[in-house]
Amino acid sequence: MKPWNEYFLGICNQVASNSKCLSRQVGAIIVRDKIIIATGYNGPPRGFRRCPDRWRDPADPLYSEAGVLRGKGPIAEDVCPRLALGCKSGERLDLCPSVHAEANCIAAAARVGVNVNHSVMYINCQVPCKWCMGLIINSGIALLVVTSLEPYDQLSPTMIGEASTNLTVRDYEGNFLSNIGTPIPSWNLTAHEGDIE
Image (cartoon, rainbow, N blue to C red):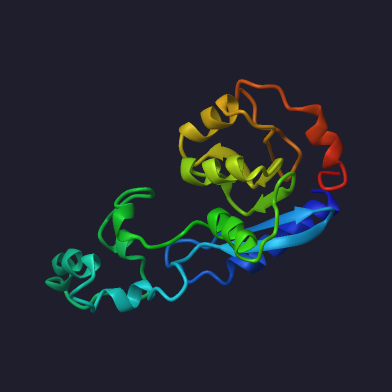
């Protein structure tokens, strides 16, 4: 792994450590000219209570879902509610208030008026879900660096290939996402040469 990639992946992992999500911790950073301009990690919106507090609130949809588990004994509060209910990754997202790291990172930049157009996003996870991919494309991020080129869902690569975008996706080792329908724009590789060395 190249030194800058290792550096930015380390920062993504540190940012992810702020996540209070009981399922997984993901971190994202947006970089321009090797300067970090925004960070984000997965978790509930500002001020929204954490999942362990939601189990006990009768007004919360999670409370009624947890009724099944209450009959089996005390609810483990250090376990993701969706996992405790037997949901697989991506199932019953209606119970999860978490905002993905990529979306929180873009929102953090917008909150303080930072333009992310033509920047680089580093994340410590695979190719993002279609919702985050839409935000990444529409915000104008030019290069997305991921730990795995395996897509979270099958629509993300299609979105990259069909969208009017100059987004390039690659992993930390320098491998590019292929079969996305469009060639990698050469301006991306030139403009971000310092970021992808």
